[in-house]
Image 1 (cartoon, one colour):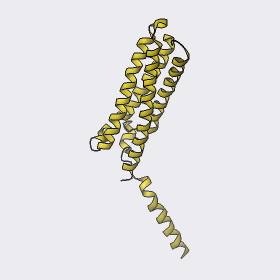
Image 2 (cartoon, helix red, strand yellow; image 1 turned 90 degrees about the vertical axis):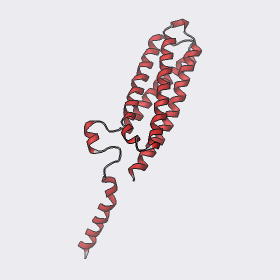
Image 3 (cartoon, helix red, strand yellow; image 1 turned 180 degrees about the vertical axis):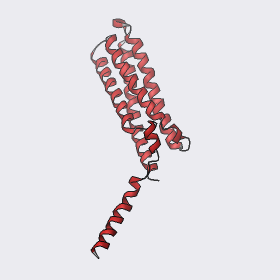
Image 4 (cartoon, rainbow, N blue to C red; image 1 turned 45 degrees about the horizontal axis):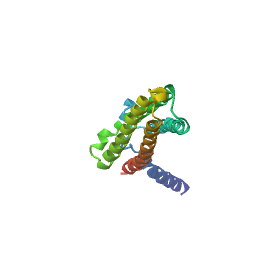
Length: 170
């Protein structure tokens, strides 16, 4: 009797765990092996790293009349590197987005915001290259624009994560 009860409990536990053990709709075993799987935490990490550099530029632009070219280039290079890496991760979702309009919309929104960040990054570098003749307002505007776009992208990342979790459950 106790053995049957124990076996019954084990079966219930095993059956309840099956959904968690099932293949993920976005991260199949093959895509994990080849490296083509979307890595949500990596994408968000790249995003946060870029945001940290934007915050530094924002502080500099609020505190000083100009940002030294070397400082602007260092931060801009890191913003560009991290945004490019985040976009690379998001691009891994494109095959699944062909059949999922909501997923495609999340990807489009993120790429649009990231493209704006990269454009503002270039504008900031161009202005900072003028040295002491740089227009502090233009630099401040570029960093403020990047800040706003990254905040919007962060909210979109959260929506994307929720969407991915919802399609995993199907």
